[in-house]
Image (cartoon, rainbow, N blue to C red):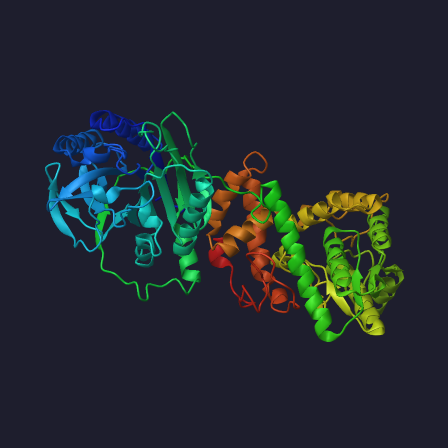
Length: 635
């Protein structure tokens, strides 16, 4: 495991020749050496990979069993110098019974042999003809390959300090897989040696099952299934390999390949531990079991730059187009339903929204229109107010008016410049002093207008601020920070942009669609500093940093609980070629300082629906003292 908590693992799919143990051993050794070169700490091979899974009644032949043991001995000799744990499948005789086993070895030494528990004997499977179940077999010592080896189902392995469990094929398909018990007893990585024949539609089912098991057990699940070379007398094996972690697939191999394969990924052991601590229902109650822990030190050097893991630069926005569209629709549904419930509860038929021509207020308007339509309310009850001030440009006010007009809502335009100048005079502020007070006067003036109009019409103010702004405290306290119901409060800025673009692309009204696209293309700005020659002069991301970086920091450091050092490391991988190390470090420092300093604003957030995996509501996911120190994180 490296300093950031990653363990490099691999699922190997060798070419096999049925019953040719020496050939199979050569393929296993070659892939094990390749894995070691890539810094893999543990490499998994398929079920019965030493003999081939499809040997049939040859498993009853002493010649095959002797050849298999000789081949395992050869593998041990040839891999003794490798800083890698190998997990191979072979038939093993113990107490005059034949078992389908996983052999775990490192440095030429067998650290444990685990027999398969659930032996399938249905449909195409006929394993009970050859093998005995390992269920109920107490740990014992057997002699194998000239070594005294621990044998039994009650073995766990600590590979470089990471507790791992092993199960075999059918063990995953039963109601309570052995890996479930292993996980609640400390195993963070599960290896599954498999020989799963292909049938139509099986791959999706199998992949979902692997992801589900890794999700339920909060483990990294490494799966390697038999492939090219197995007998095709009655079945075909595709060589499926999957590495999943906490419900998400990290890497897969190519099915139906005629080449040997090595699927490698860095699994996040720290993430698994963080998730287990956060989920108080992850417990061994009723499943506590005494395991023998076999310790393995591979001597693997994990200080290299090798990193076999894709890092998502935009964790709140799925890469897959279809999934992204689904996320956008579901987010809108949750926001809409939340607002509908609030309006129905208070008997409200009017809402007030400040429409700036920016992303957040546009999304709030979209949600309000959807809620009113589904409640059967007149859209004229949505009062959109644009409030041009010192920094307002024709582009933003034009877009604001366009989306309000095309949405069929009530439109009001209330300039704030004169009211702000009067307020400057009242409090003795020189308008030439363009500090915080100058900006906040405008934000609070706008909020005052919204609140007062809402009182006049018996309505509520819909908040527009998003979660990214909340994380940074990029809102004026008792200004745009406040509303009666905040529909965007748990939507990250990067997702807000995607949702508005999603709505633009599906919008049949060409005028409205054009305005929405231009809003997406407009720089994010509060427009509180005077425009220059009609252009925006105050760009938010120039001041606080790129929102895509801050959303990345928010997800990895706050949601996943990673250290700033690890978050920075991951950001460098995710944004390689776009932001240099200095830039990432600078904005991470800004994020941490602002996140800690601005908690008092989040402690007073209005109601609003949680839409995704994280919310900063003080009544929900994030409860933090407003005076907590950032020192440990900054240092």
